[in-house]
Image 1: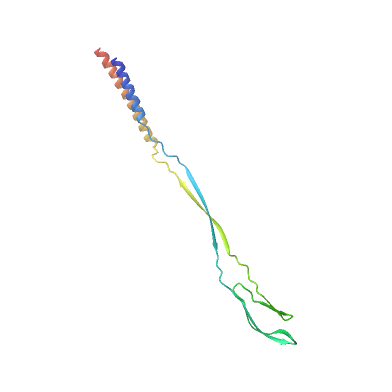
Image 2: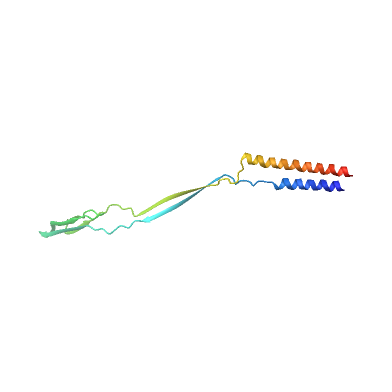
Length: 155
């Protein structure tokens, strides 16, 4: 009965020592890329613009004619007005250059997150751990053998 108890005690001690010595696993070395696309838009405000035309009119044989152009001024975006008198009708045309009023663009932001492993053991540290485990197992086996031999002598 005494031998069985001693043997079970030695096995449990050996099992507890071998199971309790375990190193932590390092984090996985990986890289995560996050891409964020943002759409931006804006409105450009254009200031008011005008062009002017000033002329003297005269009446010849019952018909109006342009006698003298006093002032013709283009604007920032407007060209000088085009003036015509046809059959006593005044016709004024003002043309503007094309304008871009609305703009839209995309911006892309890339974020890279790299995970670096922590608590990675060198080969020498691993060798020391496994060597100590082997030494501990050898000492436990020697202890068990010594106890068994000691018990046999006294019986």
